[in-house]
Image (cartoon, rainbow, N blue to C red; front, side, top):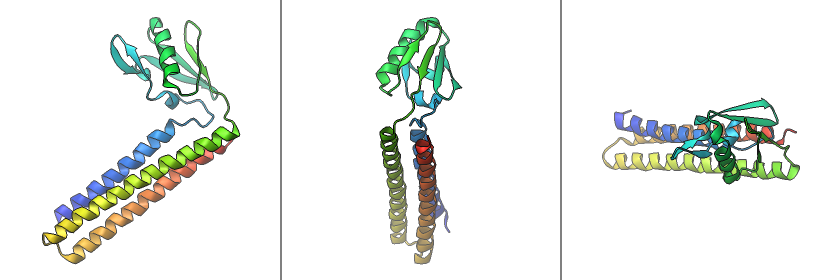
Length: 187
């Protein structure tokens, strides 16, 4: 295969890998009934005029499976962190003890579990669409190379290679989704 074709295939795989990584990141933020610091990802606080991630202004621990403990590096940040968690609207209520902020993670109801599974499936479908878009992009690039004189058999082999990558990444998405669904439905 020539160098341009290999670059197109590699770029398509990179795009597919990014779609899978994005899915994993999004699913880590979904709460499966257990406390995890990832539940607080994406929450930022105003730290002396700079929007900073919560993890950069405090220690976040899970002393047990049902609670999260946030210990700010500066006590004057307690109120700011508490407000940021409430404003994030993640369905968790912080309790400020004056030293630390404790968040109790309530067990999920059956109805909420089914909502989360739907959300997992939506995220998975979004990832699959992104993977298919990567395949379409690669195939379009290969067709344009074919018009520029790329041999047909080389183009056909490259299209098959891209399809194989598409199938592999779609299977990985299905596996990640099944794992998260199992995690959510486990009581």
